[in-house]
Length: 291
Image (cartoon, rainbow, N blue to C red; front, side, top):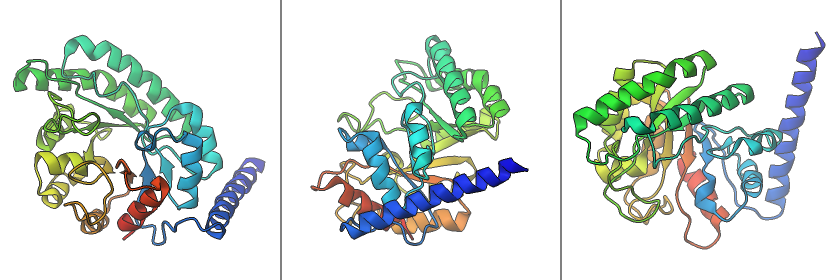
C-alpha cells in the first residue's frame, strides 16, 4: 500500500515545483502562457537552436506547456522533474523511410529501439517518415510503405506506442522549410497508408504548415481525417515563422475545431522564431492556440 502514497507524493512535489517555477517566472516579468489549457501544447527544440533542451524545458514549464517533444531520451527524466512529458519521440529522421525497401531494416531497427525507450518512459508516440521518392512510382512506393510499416507496427501495438507518419511539403526548397522529392507530401496519401496498414497504433502527424502549403482547406481535411490524426504541428505560412497575424493561417479556429472533434493529443509548436525574443514568440504562439 506504500507505493501509491509515494506516487501521489511524488506527483504533488512535481506539480508544486512546476507551479513554483511558473510563479517565479511571472515575478521576473516573463511572458504569460497557457490560461485555458483545453489544448495540450508542446514545443519542438530544433526551432530554438542553439538553445539547450533543458533551458527550453524550463521556459516551457513556466509557460504552462505539457511537453517538449522530439528530444533525445537523455532529457526525458529532466522533463519529468519539471512536470513535462515528451509528447512524441524522434526516430530515424526524414531523409530515410519506408518508401524504399533498402531503407526498411535501418528504419525498423531505429524504431524498435525508440519504441522500447518510449514504453519504459511512458512516452506514447514516436515519429516515422516516408523518406524520398527517388524515382519510384506512386504504386511501388505505396506498397513499400505499407509492407515496411507492417514490419514494425505489431511491435508498437505490443508496447502500446503509436507510430505517427509525418506528411512534409515538397514544394519549398529552403532547408527545414520543405523537402523536395519527399514521398508523403500529400495528406490523403499519408492517411491511405495508415488505413492500409490497418492498426490503431498507426496514425498521421498532421502538420498544419505542410498541409497548408500542399493543399490548403485545412479545416476540411482536419475533420475528414480526424480518426487518423495522432499528433499536430504548427508553423506560419509562408516562411515557417511565428503563427501571428502576419501570416495566412488563422490558428484559433483550427484549435477550436480540434476541441470540437474531441482531440486528446498534443499540438506541437514547430515554428522558427525570427522576431527577436524567441521565448516571447513562443509565449505568443501558445496564447494564440490556447482557445
